[in-house]
Picture 1: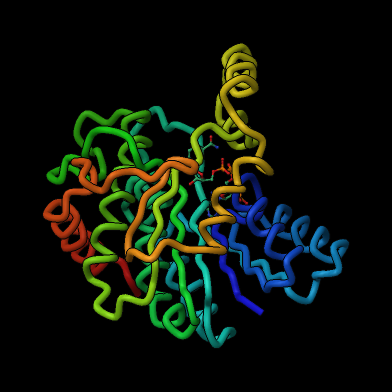
Picture 2 (picture 1 turned 60 degrees about the vertical axis):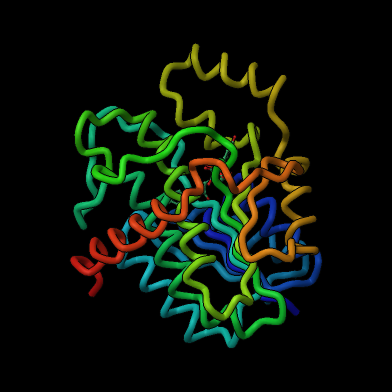
Length: 281
Ligand SMILES: NC(=O)c1ccc[n+]([C@@H]2O[C@H](COP(=O)([O-])OP(=O)(O)OC[C@H]3O[C@@H](n4cnc5c(N)ncnc54)[C@H](OP(=O)(O)O)[C@@H]3O)[C@@H](O)[C@H]2O)c1
């Protein structure tokens, strides 16, 4: 039996993936901030006859020390880990620059630092599995890059730009992870699901008219979760052989794009290590 950790596994794409693997007879650990959603997930697992293989861990993954706590808990409870899927996100766009209590920009904390801390923190546990995989659901395949002098968008903050940055940071995270991984056992996959009809996408839009418009657009261009996760399942069942790969749905994305620049990736890695030194307890 495989053990799969899914952050944001209590809703949307993450929940779709978590449920698929429960149905396949695997053990699934999901992480989310809401206990209500977590308990719903556990109830659904019981209905599937998979209650004993389902684990919910409550954590606010915007906070570095909460991610660290999850790393320690998973390491103490499980002997190995086959797959990590990163899905935790908050689609809401913050109009103003907002910091977590640890002093990081909110979306930087949840969409980037969380994946950094969990990926590196659980690396050794993953290496105990036969074919370990990290699948980071973000948005590779888009143009642009981050400003390495202002990785948290403190200057001239723009909420939409911060969201867009989150994915560019994950592109660099994948590149640095694969570069730093001298063991070379883990396959790191950056995955862009394109438009997916998740509740989180719509609930994030405050204006009711705009929300209805978005629903209409997503009805045309988007996919329901059950369909959107199919290429993800295929990749997890038969991972690519290279240490790093990127996909936009089923189409492979070229790693020669500027967003995957190795020098930028290593600069960001070093900056991140310095930033984390200030908060890790
Ligand atoms: N949907 C799309 O169209 C789309 C397009 C491109 C990329 N993506 C990417 O796909 C991934 C999944 O997106 P989705 O649409 O499936 O999201 P979603 O439906 O909104 O689900 C988000 C998940 O993250 C959890 N979460 C949110 N804040 C959290 C926090 N502070 N701590 C811990 N967990 C937290 C939520 O649980 P709680 O509410 O309990 O915290 C929930 O389980 C994301 O990485 C997103 O960027 C999505």
